[in-house]
Amino acid sequence: MNYLQWLTKETPTQFWNDSAIPSEIDEAIENGAVGVTTNPVLAYKALQADPEFWQDKVDRISQDLRPEERAEALLKMVVTYDAKKFESVYIKSKGANGYALAQLNPSICMDTDRMIEQGLRYASWAENVSVKTPSVMSALPLVEELAGRGIAVCTTLNFSVSQAMAVAEAYNKGRTKALVDGTPVKPLFLVQQGGRLDEYLYECAKDNHMNFDPEDIKNAGNAVCRKVYRLLQEKNIPAIVMPAGLRRVDHLTSMAGAKMTFSLQPRVQKMVIEADPERVSNIDEAINPAIIRRLYKIPEFVRAYEEGGLKPEEFVTFGITQKTASQFLWTGWVPLENYQNHNTSARWF
Image (cartoon, rainbow, N blue to C red; front, top):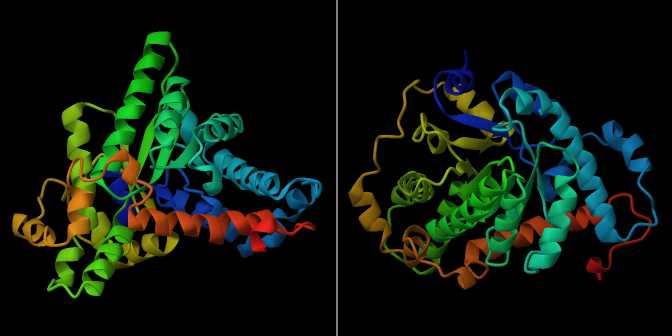
């Protein structure tokens, strides 16, 4: 077995393939993947990577659709294909695994009612579709509503303990309602963007001419992720932590053995397999407290790490949240609106 096969078979740790490209999904399944991450960027990349594979389905999409409708139709095409690939995993795990993610239109993610409307459409695509939303204040009622209806939810753009716990508590309220109503419950996947947070903190510290050790910052994202994992256990909230945006092998290996589900890009999967790290559980090996103390010199780390470091109304204004949300819109959703579209989206003007 390679490292990923060992990890998924011999420990509680699981992983999803962070790519919607069919050939990459197939390879990841061989290495133990139990789900697939999709978002507007990944859906567009899948279309670009193998346009002939998708062309027949693309041709069936009406040219009369508004740009936003076309983007959603293309996303549905990719997501439902991906969901079918993991249908057997979903059935075998009784709904614990085997999901494909369907991410909401980034431009409506400050409008709760529109998010709920779109989220319910997404959930109708397949039993094993998990509705994906950014962790902003407007999404909290959405998470509760979907969880209460027995719909799987994934929250992305989680860069802080505050965001993660607010989402987890909203999910728990909805889950409790579902249990009372006799509705079968489905999971919440809490994406923690560790590598992206590391990069953001490095940029902040560098721009502010702070005296810092880059090696310390390499622990920041995992420190936040570990704290969320611990708090969920303490509060008995059955959410699944999903580390994503990994940049290095140790982003994975330092938390090996945790009951987490990582989202791994194909290049990261390859990196890990080639490194062939020691096959041991490291989740119980705490980060050196001295590193955490030094990281506290960076104000943005404090905001990310402290429970209550961000108020719900600040989730959307947190710098890295804004930065990543913009990427989802302009490098994913907008290109989908315009993909082989005879009517150019007004967003380009």
